[in-house]
Amino acid sequence: MLTVTTKTSQQENLLAGLRAVLGEHGLLTDANDCARFTTGARYGQGSTLAVLRPDSHEQVVECVRLCADAEQAVVLQGANTGLVAASTPDASGRYVVLSLERIKKHIEVDVINRSVSVDAGVSLQELNEALEPHGLFFPIDLGANPSIGGMIAANTGGARLVKYGDVRQNLLGLRAVLMHPAGEVLDLQTALRKNNTGPDLKQLFVGSSGAYGIITRAVLQVHRIPKQTATALVVPRDQAAVLELLSVLERDCSEFLTAFEGVSGAALQAVLKHIPSISNPFAPEPVPHYCVLLELASTADPQVTGIDLESVLMRCLENLFGDVVENAVVGRGKDLWRIRHAISEALRHEGKMIAFDISMPRSSFVKFRDEGLALMAEKYPWIKVMDFGHWADGGCHFNMVWPSAEQAESTNAIPSYDAQVVQQIRTEIYDLVVNTYQGSFSAEHGVGPYNLDFYQRYTASSSRQLAGELQTMLDPKRLLGLTWFGE
Image: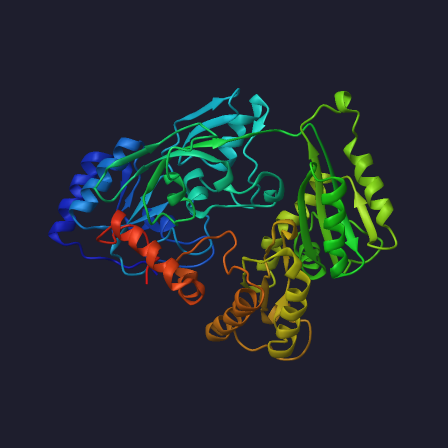
């Protein structure tokens, strides 16, 4: 429900000043026009005083100055694809949304330096479309199409992190607007890979959920598009064999390994059930208990190196058949990746999703998964665990579904969805991840209102204190964002 907010004279004066800076198309106040900016990608429906849509860095600076002078709270928003409610306002109506979606005029490619200077509002797809003619790409592989500024604020990783790293590892420089001093610009736009002249201040903004400043431009390291790839969907002997397979690939194919994605049989079944265009790759054999999507890639010319990656992959898997590997489909890369990218959509058709974005040392995965599945089967037997994830980088989406009545697989009654029970499940799983297996409750999605309680629960007091002191220094009146990192 959209909340109608009665504006004070101070707010009216602020909106008049913002309208003078942004123009009629740059400032939205009508509830219907604002609706898409106040609805989260997965969670939350909020309300806003107005949506600010600057189309330049200079307009961002002026908006920040006006909002700071009026002590107006601001929520930053890129493509609004985040999953922890950090980019959408709450229901109070006291925030304005500062959307960077129109700041997307500049994509300046330096082919020799293998870098690009790009405005924060440019989407990942738009960036890669601009890089492709140069034989380059930004290799953060995601199911969504976020903006570059949002990717930095969340430090996104994706399916190919094992080869290319996350955003943090590919960020060379940035430009940010500070809330204090109001509108001051911190220009860290360097294209250098080596610069040891003091603290690396750009890293303050990475993974900060927009709480430390407003990124308006970034300088990114980009990579050459592979000239050949080899893909396989592999059925391991059991869970322990997944790690054996990973160890062999890293030993024998390490420079080529770009992805190693686990997919549970339950998740694959959901894809086949709800996405009609995707068929069982193992047919006529049934869906396996678990499978691994793996990819090798090389930017080298095979005519120069004499290396055929598909042959390399086939030989590697053949050596493991009967011991580590039970079955495999090799080739059909686009079809196999479609399965992986369709999982989240398929799970939504099963009922209400309970999503987990966790990580831990890879050596703990098998024990955690066994214990997590046992916990759910014993205490919450009606919940379906449909997990998948990035085994090679320690990430796991231990996702679950609270089935709807239509999706019930038996005549047994399924309890009505209960938010308190879901919170209890989250706490039990996160306690297992963090306290037992020294993992993280948020591997990729960052910290926002949706998981702020867990940040307070699991983050050391000394870390929260330092993060809060930095935030207070940069935003003493706490006007920027919905996330407070302090005590």
